[in-house]
Length: 202
Image 1 (tube, helix red, strand yellow):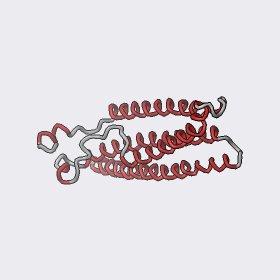
Image 2: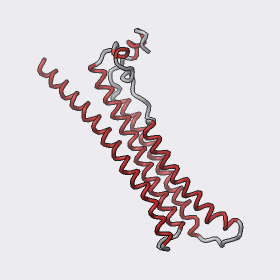
Image 3: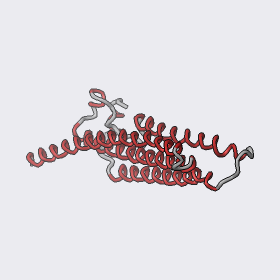
Image 4: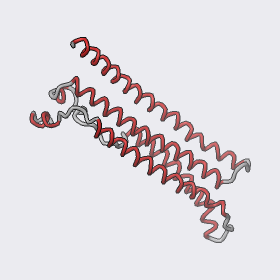
């Protein structure tokens, strides 16, 4: 029985380390995605050479920004889910008194909200999309409204793409929230909140 407990503890500790490694790996992948996002501005060089129009270039950058934002939403879910699993393991090894001796973060899992690190990355993705949309609006939409240029169907492509990206992103966020709620419902971990309250630790 003792040997079985030792094996279980070793397995849990190995899982604990792997969960942290998974978080670190995925956080590093976000930086690679940022490189792709920023390099998207190279698309504007194609406008200079008349390879593609401003309308198509704007649509492509919106699409790339949406792809990046989808990664941050997914990463946020994986981060919070892995952290919840880590907390469940910590509650098996740490006592309630460790709330004061070490840290209080293992009492309960965090909600499925983005950590500041991912919020900053998300702001970059949204910021780039907003800039290109404003640029397109100033150069293409306002001249049409003022009667300087004629209306062309191609002008609305970036806005169709924008709408087509917002809906899937919203659906992805909702799905990941549901996935996280399902995980917490099925694997809530050891409940130490009542004991912590009795000791006046929370």
